[in-house]
Image (cartoon, helix red, strand yellow):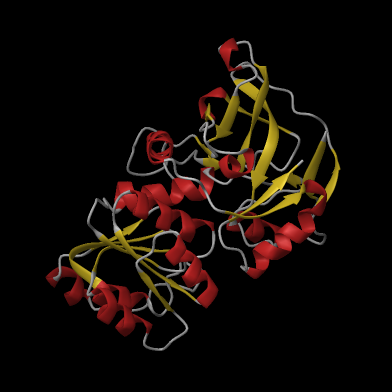
Length: 331
């Protein structure tokens, strides 16, 4: 079969022939119809991720058709259209992932291939209203943000929500979840065009975080926020405490702008704020996300679709952060 392979630290991803996976008794073989990129894939290609091994087939997001099932797997899965939960071995505690938790696409070969093998417990019926490209865009970023907003942030109808850094897959998904849940949503971005696109998706308003007074603009625009979802951290993180309403939740799952600066703890205890970290999500979160998608007919935003043979161009676009939504690849 053909796959997109990260062969070494010195060379970019290449599209080449590799051996087709052999499944175990509890596994299925999925013929990939579409796969999507995540920021994780980019960090791996530039060597800034733990446990990198070569060669590797990256890709955590994928949707396709089950073409082979192991001896211990229900035969009814054969020929079914599925999407894959990339979070493996979450563990018994809903509050956090266990020590054996891994993400598809490293260390196990991922979805940027014609075929991928996964344990049967990690496949789910593809939402019928989604095209292959849309379904493939959903798993990792969708799961991460659904847990951040709904499980950790406990967002509910009528809440005022702030999404920082809208534009990439996680920011757009957070916006979509919050709008579908009936929240009043505001966003930030460094791009005016992305702010306008966010409004088309249902954002009430937004500001450019490159402005020195972006936080003051938001304060005047919205007053304050019940839930704030952040993936950047960095020096401006303390401003989120000022923007949070009393009893508010600030949830973060990334640190692209750096670490958390020194914070005024008095603001936190006096306003009774919660600062919550989160990573990926449990199988229960994944099931809840799919139920939410089906109930609200959510359609993931796909920025551009590339052929597997154009993988280098897809990774280049990911590196430049120029996309709005998800970058998808198809065999």
